[in-house]
Image 1 (cartoon, rainbow, N blue to C red):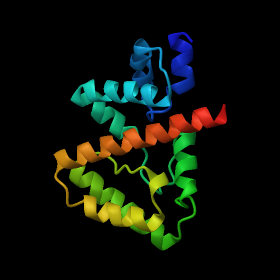
Image 2: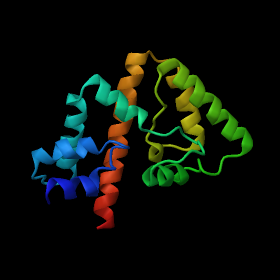
Image 3: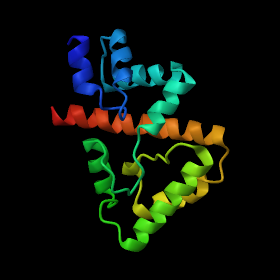
Image 4: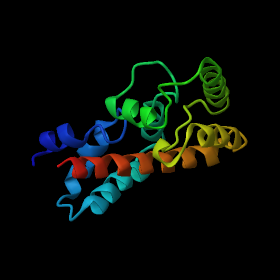
Length: 157
C-alpha cells in the first residue's frame, strides 16, 4: 500500500490527525495490529507538544450534540451518550465546560471501557489532576481508542 492509500485507510484512527498514519507509514511493514498500533503510538510520543495538543483538541466533547467523526459517533452511541436525558446532558455539558476551563483541552476517555455512570465518575476524579498528569492520561486514553479502532478495521476485513 502506498502512503496515500495507507493514510486514506487509517488516517482517521487518531481523531482528526491523519499525520499520525502518514508518519507511521515509514515504519512498514507491520507484522500485526499490535506492531502497527505501536508504530502509530511512537509517532505520537515523538510528536511536538503542539502536535500532541492539536491531536487532543481534535476530539469532540462527550455527550455533545456537535458534529463529530463517524467513529466517535459510534463509540459514544455504544455507551448511550447519544441518548442522554436532559439532566444527563446538562451534567455532561457542565463537566465538559469545567474540564476545558481547567485544562484547555477536551476530556477524553476510551468509552468502550465505560458506562455513562463510570464516565461521569472518571470525569469528576480526573478534574482533580494536575494539567501535566491529565495530559498524559488523555494521551493514554487516545492510544486505547486508536487500538480499538484498528482492531475494528481488522475485524471488519
